[in-house]
Amino acid sequence: MAEVLFYHLTESRLEDALPPLLEKSLERGWRVSVHVSSEERCAALDAHLWTYREDSFLPHGGDQSAHAERQPVLLTVDATAANGATVRFVADGADIPALDGVDRLVMMFDGHDQSQLDAARSQWKTLKSGGHALTYWQQTPERRWEKKA
Image (cartoon, rainbow, N blue to C red):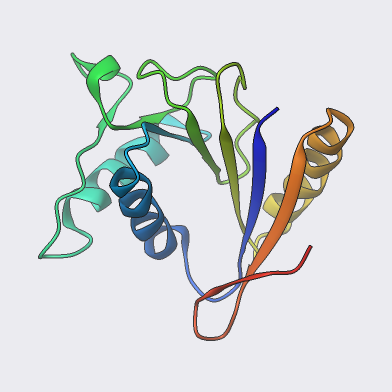
């Protein structure tokens, strides 16, 4: 069973919160995928991850790239991850990806978007009934993560 973490964005946008989490994942030696709901969102995140901070380098690529299977961070709309990621991030209300071989699933949702809140509630119920260990984290006003459940 995958460990599942729900991250409720209340103080920042996904574009601000995701890069540090991806950096920490890579520091731990994890292979990661980021699942979003559209190719346009993949392209926007791809562009953002190259430029979000001047002094950083976050190696990543999309599932349409020539060597998707070699990407340490893969941006995708597919249910599976071509790079064999054991840590999967889901954002923007995208569907729960395939969980075979997944150790950690991170569900990130915008607390100011009702459709994402509704999707997160539904996904919580689905994953809970599947027997996964779930935790719920919410941002503090300082943009730190606080465990709520």
